[in-house]
Image 1 (cartoon, rainbow, N blue to C red):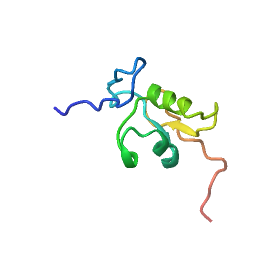
Image 2: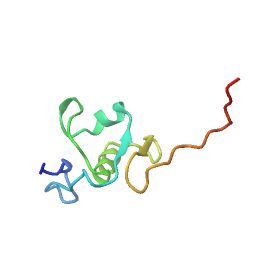
Image 3: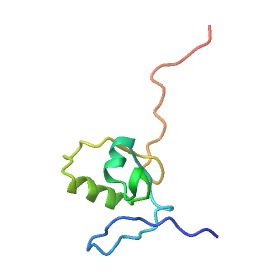
Length: 89
């Protein structure tokens, strides 16, 4: 059994978050935004959604300024329906 992936964020009181992240929702942001908040040099590490939020706020990112989407868990967006029917021929 492999150990859980634990959040590397600071946590609410600065003592470390350590929430398991491998069973929660995965939130994707651009590589550029991730590098701004990554816990390890060169974009390494893992953060829970709460710690991602806290780091963006601490850096002064305005509300709605970080494009993101959930790719797993109950908030993951379903595939968008086709906008038109495609036919062959």
